[in-house]
Amino acid sequence: MRLLSIGETAAELGAAVGTLRRWHRQGLLMPFGRTVGGHWRYQRGTYRVTLGAEPAVAGKTVCYARVSSHDQAEQLKTQATQLERHCINARFADIEVMTGLGSGLNYRKKGLRQLLTDILRGRVARLVLVTKDRLPRFGSELLFRICEFFHVEVIVLDAVPDVSREQRPTEDLVEILTVFASRLYGSRSRKNQKALAI
Image (tube, rainbow, N blue to C red; front, side):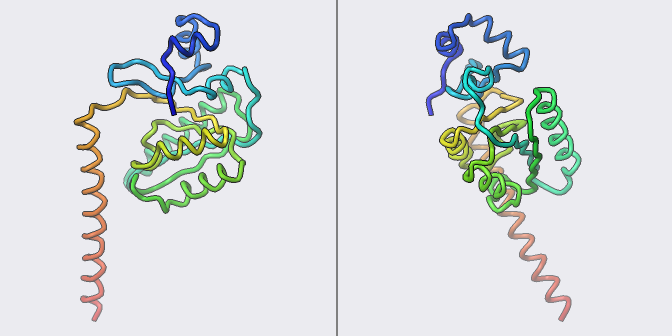
């Protein structure tokens, strides 16, 4: 998937770069993300639907929120509320909120599986996220590609700048260690409980 610069996007739309920046501030045109250097990048196709240049695909708008652990339940509610409020303000129809609770390495989360099923069955017109990392930690680009194939518009509310090359592997490694440590200690805990029950 090739992302377009703000200049390329402006040229395709026949508008000035300043106009695109104004549309961004108004919430009419949301970038896909930023480069390491802080430059906005746009995904071809999604901005045309947002601006009404093409008819939106029939289907529902899905707000997907995820947190990693049970002690972040309040954050999950906050995410879901923020997403739903954005969709209401944007006057999107047929809004559904899906949530996931668990690590970004866990692909068995009920909400994520339901989201994938609905996309593959053509039921989703739009996917709204707070940040891109609310999807699986690894493989999110594959899910974005699936959305593109099925003409699902993806909106990321907080398009934060990409992290550095050094920071990304560090964060990934911490995520992996956290997951496996939790599984290891969880397994030991169950074994200890069984031993005590004998």
